[in-house]
Length: 175
Image (cartoon, rainbow, N blue to C red; front, top):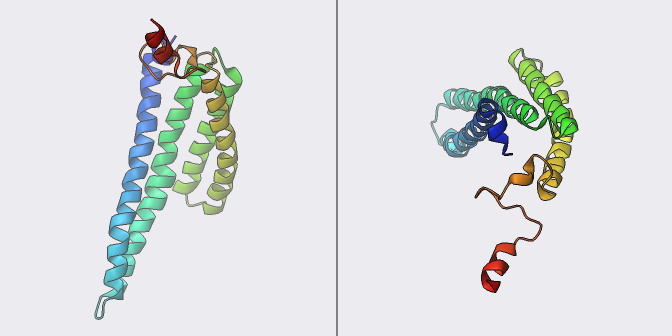
Protein backbone atom coordinates (compact mmCIF):
# COMPACT_ATOMS: atom_id res chain seq x y z
CA UNK A 1 0.00 0.00 0.00
CA UNK A 2 1.33 3.42 -0.90
CA UNK A 3 2.23 5.66 2.03
CA UNK A 4 -0.31 8.32 1.12
CA UNK A 5 -3.11 5.71 1.22
CA UNK A 6 -2.46 4.92 4.90
CA UNK A 7 -2.69 8.39 6.39
CA UNK A 8 -3.25 10.97 3.67
CA UNK A 9 -3.11 13.97 6.01
CA UNK A 10 0.19 12.80 7.52
CA UNK A 11 1.61 12.11 4.05
CA UNK A 12 0.53 15.57 2.88
CA UNK A 13 2.11 17.17 5.96
CA UNK A 14 5.36 15.31 5.33
CA UNK A 15 5.32 16.34 1.67
CA UNK A 16 4.69 19.99 2.54
CA UNK A 17 7.47 19.88 5.15
CA UNK A 18 9.90 18.42 2.60
CA UNK A 19 8.93 20.86 -0.14
CA UNK A 20 9.03 23.80 2.26
CA UNK A 21 12.49 22.73 3.43
CA UNK A 22 13.79 22.58 -0.14
CA UNK A 23 12.12 25.80 -1.29
CA UNK A 24 13.09 27.86 1.77
CA UNK A 25 16.67 26.60 1.60
CA UNK A 26 16.82 27.41 -2.11
CA UNK A 27 15.53 30.93 -1.53
CA UNK A 28 18.25 31.45 1.05
CA UNK A 29 20.96 30.14 -1.26
CA UNK A 30 19.71 32.20 -4.21
CA UNK A 31 19.60 35.32 -2.04
CA UNK A 32 23.20 34.84 -0.98
CA UNK A 33 24.31 34.01 -4.52
CA UNK A 34 22.67 37.05 -6.08
CA UNK A 35 22.82 39.76 -3.43
CA UNK A 36 26.07 38.82 -1.67
CA UNK A 37 28.42 39.39 -4.62
CA UNK A 38 26.67 42.66 -5.52
CA UNK A 39 27.19 43.95 -1.98
CA UNK A 40 30.85 42.88 -2.05
CA UNK A 41 31.45 44.65 -5.37
CA UNK A 42 29.75 47.79 -4.08
CA UNK A 43 31.82 47.66 -0.88
CA UNK A 44 35.04 47.66 -2.95
CA UNK A 45 34.05 50.75 -4.97
CA UNK A 46 35.79 54.02 -4.18
CA UNK A 47 33.56 56.31 -2.14
CA UNK A 48 31.13 53.55 -1.18
CA UNK A 49 29.32 53.79 2.14
CA UNK A 50 31.15 50.77 3.50
CA UNK A 51 29.48 50.93 6.92
CA UNK A 52 25.98 50.74 5.40
CA UNK A 53 27.03 47.98 3.00
CA UNK A 54 28.59 46.00 5.87
CA UNK A 55 25.32 46.29 7.81
CA UNK A 56 23.32 45.15 4.77
CA UNK A 57 25.66 42.18 4.20
CA UNK A 58 25.51 41.23 7.89
CA UNK A 59 21.72 41.39 7.80
CA UNK A 60 21.60 39.25 4.66
CA UNK A 61 23.78 36.53 6.19
CA UNK A 62 21.87 36.59 9.51
CA UNK A 63 18.53 36.21 7.74
CA UNK A 64 19.73 33.40 5.50
CA UNK A 65 21.83 31.45 7.99
CA UNK A 66 19.85 31.88 11.21
CA UNK A 67 16.27 32.64 10.16
CA UNK A 68 15.97 30.44 7.07
CA UNK A 69 18.56 27.67 7.21
CA UNK A 70 18.69 27.09 10.96
CA UNK A 71 15.22 28.07 12.22
CA UNK A 72 12.64 27.74 9.44
CA UNK A 73 14.35 24.81 7.72
CA UNK A 74 14.77 23.08 11.09
CA UNK A 75 11.03 23.26 11.71
CA UNK A 76 10.12 22.18 8.17
CA UNK A 77 12.45 19.19 8.12
CA UNK A 78 11.17 18.14 11.55
CA UNK A 79 7.64 18.05 10.08
CA UNK A 80 8.97 15.96 7.19
CA UNK A 81 10.79 13.51 9.48
CA UNK A 82 7.83 13.12 11.84
CA UNK A 83 5.51 12.53 8.88
CA UNK A 84 7.82 9.88 7.50
CA UNK A 85 7.97 8.22 10.93
CA UNK A 86 4.19 8.07 11.28
CA UNK A 87 3.82 6.75 7.74
CA UNK A 88 6.32 3.90 7.96
CA UNK A 89 5.89 2.92 11.63
CA UNK A 90 3.79 -0.25 11.03
CA UNK A 91 6.37 -1.73 8.62
CA UNK A 92 9.67 -0.16 9.72
CA UNK A 93 9.46 0.72 13.42
CA UNK A 94 13.23 1.05 13.89
CA UNK A 95 13.54 3.38 10.89
CA UNK A 96 10.52 5.31 12.20
CA UNK A 97 12.20 5.72 15.60
CA UNK A 98 15.32 7.11 13.91
CA UNK A 99 13.08 9.51 11.95
CA UNK A 100 11.41 10.68 15.18
CA UNK A 101 14.82 11.14 16.79
CA UNK A 102 16.01 13.24 13.88
CA UNK A 103 12.82 15.29 13.82
CA UNK A 104 13.14 15.96 17.54
CA UNK A 105 16.80 16.92 17.20
CA UNK A 106 15.96 19.32 14.36
CA UNK A 107 13.38 21.01 16.61
CA UNK A 108 15.90 21.17 19.47
CA UNK A 109 18.47 22.72 17.14
CA UNK A 110 15.94 25.29 15.87
CA UNK A 111 15.07 26.14 19.49
CA UNK A 112 18.74 26.60 20.38
CA UNK A 113 19.05 28.89 17.36
CA UNK A 114 15.98 30.92 18.33
CA UNK A 115 17.26 31.57 21.85
CA UNK A 116 20.81 32.33 20.73
CA UNK A 117 22.61 29.23 22.02
CA UNK A 118 24.93 28.89 19.05
CA UNK A 119 27.34 26.37 20.57
CA UNK A 120 24.50 24.07 21.67
CA UNK A 121 22.90 24.43 18.23
CA UNK A 122 26.15 23.54 16.48
CA UNK A 123 26.77 20.52 18.73
CA UNK A 124 23.23 19.32 18.04
CA UNK A 125 23.75 19.79 14.31
CA UNK A 126 26.92 17.67 14.50
CA UNK A 127 24.86 14.84 15.97
CA UNK A 128 22.10 15.41 13.42
CA UNK A 129 24.43 15.16 10.44
CA UNK A 130 25.85 11.85 11.65
CA UNK A 131 22.39 10.38 12.20
CA UNK A 132 21.09 11.88 8.96
CA UNK A 133 23.79 10.05 7.00
CA UNK A 134 22.63 6.78 8.58
CA UNK A 135 18.99 7.71 7.85
CA UNK A 136 19.78 8.40 4.17
CA UNK A 137 21.70 5.14 3.73
CA UNK A 138 18.97 3.15 5.51
CA UNK A 139 16.26 4.72 3.33
CA UNK A 140 18.26 3.94 0.19
CA UNK A 141 18.53 0.28 1.23
CA UNK A 142 14.79 0.10 2.02
CA UNK A 143 13.96 1.56 -1.39
CA UNK A 144 16.47 -0.59 -3.27
CA UNK A 145 15.17 -3.77 -1.66
CA UNK A 146 11.57 -2.61 -2.09
CA UNK A 147 11.01 -3.33 1.59
CA UNK A 148 7.57 -2.64 3.03
CA UNK A 149 6.03 -0.09 2.75
CA UNK A 150 8.08 0.81 -0.32
CA UNK A 151 7.41 -2.42 -2.23
CA UNK A 152 4.44 -0.94 -4.06
CA UNK A 153 6.55 1.78 -5.70
CA UNK A 154 6.41 1.33 -9.44
CA UNK A 155 3.21 -0.75 -9.34
CA UNK A 156 0.90 2.24 -9.75
CA UNK A 157 2.83 4.27 -12.30
CA UNK A 158 5.05 5.73 -9.55
CA UNK A 159 8.83 5.49 -9.42
CA UNK A 160 10.10 2.16 -10.63
CA UNK A 161 12.61 0.70 -8.20
CA UNK A 162 12.76 -2.83 -9.57
CA UNK A 163 15.91 -4.85 -9.13
CA UNK A 164 15.79 -5.45 -12.91
CA UNK A 165 15.33 -1.95 -14.36
CA UNK A 166 14.85 -3.12 -17.98
CA UNK A 167 12.25 -5.75 -17.17
CA UNK A 168 9.45 -3.84 -18.91
CA UNK A 169 11.48 -3.29 -22.08
CA UNK A 170 12.29 -7.02 -22.29
CA UNK A 171 8.68 -8.04 -21.90
CA UNK A 172 7.61 -5.64 -24.66
CA UNK A 173 10.34 -6.88 -26.99
CA UNK A 174 9.50 -10.51 -26.28
CA UNK A 175 5.74 -10.13 -26.52
